[in-house]
Length: 75
Image 1 (cartoon, rainbow, N blue to C red):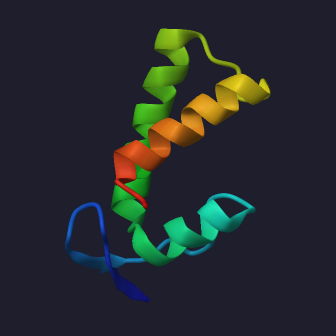
Image 2 (tube, one colour):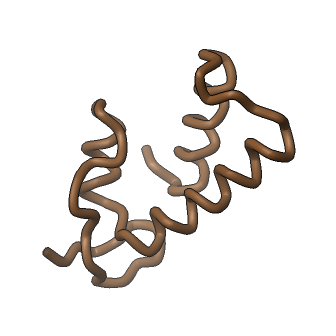
């Protein structure tokens, strides 16, 4: 399936499944292509290393979610 990605503004293949098991994951599935998702995965890893984040920590997880929303310019 092809979608019009809201990040890169191109028609590209959609992700095969929602990357997160929540409403945000469904929004990402509908609006973000696989290529841009992989860009975020690399960005997230950089943030985790730079700030020494633990995704199991609720505060750190919220920070990463907020950064993801900014990265994808989601509303």
